[in-house]
Length: 622
Image (cartoon, rainbow, N blue to C red):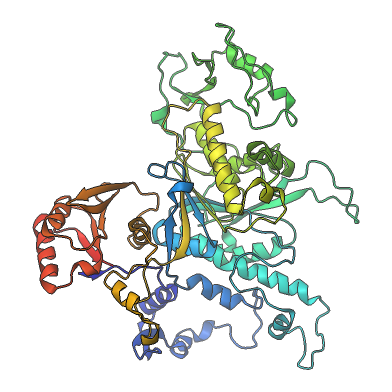
């Protein structure tokens, strides 16, 4: 009976395996602190193998470094023993949704996601904290005092004299920011598909450092463009220099070179039909609800009337996507689908024959009519108050999503903030019938006491984000007339916590009578069976959005994941009939807690039942 290894793998061990395959002669063994032998690399032997190609010692070479870089790199490879605990009460459609909202440090989240989402994310968008020289909320322990920075940076001589005329705080805060970003980008790269892409919003403070980090992590050959977005609608006259900084960048890298990313969504020809025998052939319906407020685009706000029936469909809160002259051309060309109920929304015909497989290129100057104040108004209209500073407008992210994802792609945002990315994904799906999924990660940063967010009742940034998804999903579903369709606006909330299992290696002084009684299960008192289930899913590389069905066999709780991909039971005193019924379902994996098998005879009986009914099942214990 094999033991299921929980937690994330040590990526250093994986790197050693790679070197060992290439240079087996440099592998050796050393004793660790407990006296156990472990495999490692003899660097002197490796040096001899690569003697002609080493950049070592004082030799000049091009490099980008900062105090703390080595520690940041090691942080990405460090294993973590943590769990994702489900929060059903804070979720929407927990049992059916395939969207995820992970609450916790995104460094831990990326380590955990790597187990079961490596190579599966088509697009990553992040809007990381811009460097203002303040401390970061992320507890990586990278922030350093001025004295510590001085000692490690080499900016001072041994007597304390300054060698470089530069404020220590400037370099120190650059170093902290780089150390915060570096391990997260290293892990993010592993999540991308071979044709995936990552987009990072940034301003001038760290754009140079971000480019250098990404050149190292993703490869300079995978840099595509720095998109320039006009973020400010009106010039700022308060700047002492007389120059109003009206732009931000979205830095764009791909996973591998040679991939054309901006090609538009893959068309799913199955969704194109011709129920009304239109002479132009098969068509699909597209959303016509707009994305701009009446203040921003008054010409898109008007009542839309069906000239044949006289039904007035009114005007959605965010207007229509086309002005009145364009709508009249669509009506005359019989391209509008009119619902029979006034509560529905008219949609537009998109003909399969008119779709081009060779879409025009995408300009590095982003031609989107939305600004930072657009995002602020959008969120304020949803939540009824200004509860978040400088949220990105959903149209900005939706523009990228529509161009560089397929209809069923996974989109990740691990600095999700006000969850603009979730709204953009839902809106894109409503527009083109897609089934994209989002994975969002946000640290539960406490809102500032006395702020509008705090006074409105939002205790954390995560609370704001979750409420935004709830309201935006409902609003989009109602406005697009998708009330009766299988349209996913839900999300499954998972919170990062310590492992569900007690430390098996407590010292005698740490062992109490209560802890001894718990050794049979080794499970913390405040944890549920579903908590345990979500800790083992990454270990088996099963998606965290997997379908979960609960069964009861002889009074025992059984989790059936993705229709017999995994059957898990965490009850004790399981009898032969329960095991036999599980085996007869022929799961790919079967997982139990090890206390079920107190005796060798129980293990033998268990293995015989699976050998009889399901010999291909991989059985594990925790």
